[in-house]
Image (cartoon, rainbow, N blue to C red; front, side, top):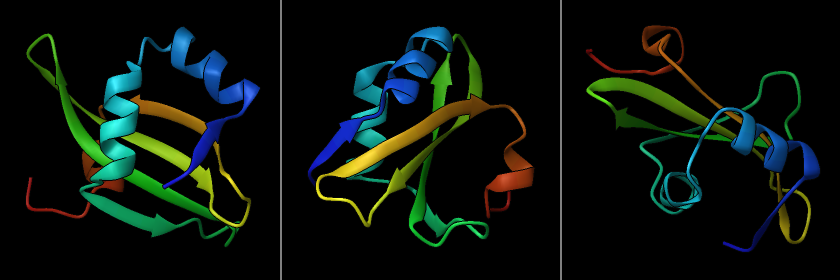
Length: 88
């Protein structure tokens, strides 16, 4: 998949201390994907990541209608049950 980071996504990556490696891994092999209910041009790629003995859900919002695809924003959360469809 061809993609670029928006300025906002770059800022969020630095502010939230999310590694480029985790971002690329999640985009290339997401555990789950979903279309954003508010904007069908946005696909959410997400995977569980472990940092310092704590599990987070990494969520990456990508505009898949653009070429190359644009990473709009991203964040990690501990509210896994809210967004992740699984038996955690």
